[in-house]
Image (cartoon, rainbow, N blue to C red):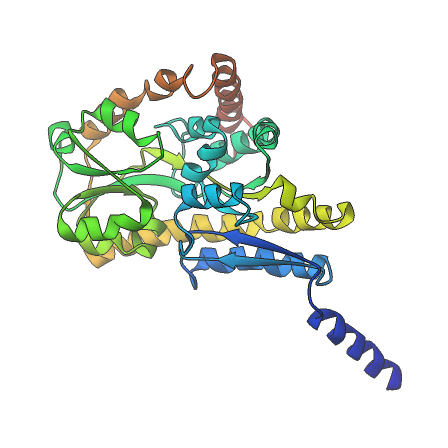
Amino acid sequence: MGLALVVSASVSSAQTSAPKYILKLGAVTPPGTSQARVEQRIADRIDEATQGEVKAVWYFGAILGDDIEMVRKARLGQLDGGGWVESGLSEIAREVMLLGTPFFFNFTLNDYSEALCTLDGSLPSYQRLFERKGFVLVDWFPLGGLFFMSKQPFQSLKDVENLKFWSWSGYPMFQPIFDALGVKNQVSLSLTEVLPALQTGMIDATVAIPFGFVSLQWYTEQRYILDFPISFLNAAVVLKKSSLEKIPPPLQEKVLQAIRETRKEWLEVDMEGNGKIFQALLDYGIQPIRNPELMEQVKKRTEGVAKGMTGKYWSQEFYDQMVGLRDQCRALRSGPEAVE
């Protein structure tokens, strides 16, 4: 009994002692959501793996700005990293945008297999790009399909052209897509400015994943959603290299492993959640735009976006490498070993 009390006291003391190293992490994920709980699980795993020596503290709900602003804060030493989507990741390495160009992947709300295969294969290449910029790309945390949503009904490209679309300020991806579609009104705003802009009528159309429409409350101001995704939204957990290097190497590896081990939980929550949320939007009364002809027109207009960005944001060699990797994954999925 005495030994048990000593052990219990020792464990309690270790768990309550002040951490030696603190990692400040930022995310736009609203607190209390399923995604935020998984991100918090990263912090819990780090605490467990390092026996309390390293503590990760999350700042949720875009209280430190959107992803682009958080990357800038990390460069200034105000953050040690975070969970960021492509807008923020591309602030570090523009090549990230290639994987999010329209129709780069074949996928559905319930099947990310081609995208996941490509992401896993591409990780070492992207990690080298991030390291040269002073960041550690720990692992991809994919988010799934991006959809158009609007206040106004749209059934043709002419309707799409006349919508007032939100374009993410500082993120170069949206403009070439909207240019290819012939959108006449592109309003550049940060993520936190979108809801007020919808409420005032400054914009009437947005692009997001189902989770984003709900968690950011954009669905309350819009009534129509395109029923097919135009591209795949990726995210990643990233740490500032100098912040990680302040931690002793044995603990560094435990931190990185704790993050990687959480990816499976993220995928389970994300894939199940987006499908349920999309259906919940329809149940709420959002009207789906189901128009195969419009889908083909959108695909035809945007299929050249990735090639058009090649040479400006990434090299032809890099483009060929990623397309080759994607095509290998596509062939594996459609071959005799594919599992339906």
